Structure formats: C-alpha cells, structure tokens
Image (tube, rainbow, N blue to C red; front, side, top):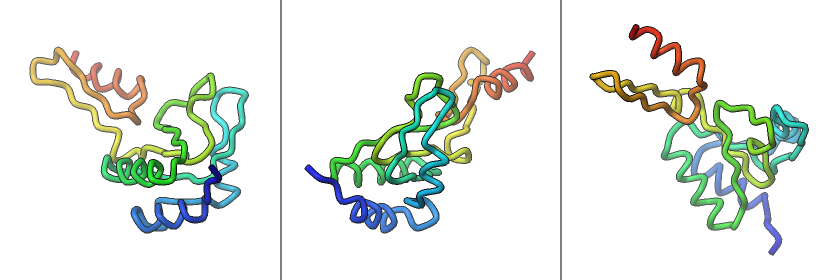
Length: 126
C-alpha cells in the first residue's frame, strides 16, 4: 500500500492546525537524528502540546496506516527517537508535569521530563 503523505499532511493540519504540523524538508532533516549514529528522515513532524493532540495524531495515522515514532525529552542512543512516517514530538509544556504525592513516597513524571529535572524536584524535599 502506498501512502499519500500530502493527504496525511492535510488531515493533520485540519485536526491540529498549521502551527503544529510540518513537512518542510529542512525541519524534517533537523529531526532525523538523535544521539545514535542513525539518520531516518520522517515524512511529517508533529508537535503535540497535549494528550488530545497526540490522540488526534494517532487517529489520523491509523486511518492512513502511517507509522508513528514518539519523541519526548530523551535523545536515544540507539535510534528509537527517530523514524519514518510521522515523528510525534511531545511538547515540553503539556508533557513536563512532575507530581510528588503528599507523603513524598511517589513521583509521577510526564513523558518530556528528563531525569535531572525529576531529581531536582526531589532534592528540594530534603
């Protein structure tokens, strides 16, 4: 099955708006690598700032049978933060939440939280 990425792009723009979706070759190339030695250029880059944005992206991808690769705060040393199809970038605002429960026995972090930020939050409790 051949994927028409122009149609996928149009559907994503309709669902998320032009500000969140790009198929610009320079932007695609910029996001085609991580800390590994791999380079895989995605067809479309989506910046999701909320769970709703991620769900809408996955719905469009499923309807067109397009692969999706998630990327958040991590850089990946083995290539799992890059991929063909749609590269779904989880935005810093909507996915950087850090919650520490009242008795300080548990911490919950969003997908875009790096270990250093989680540790810094915990350190303030000492």
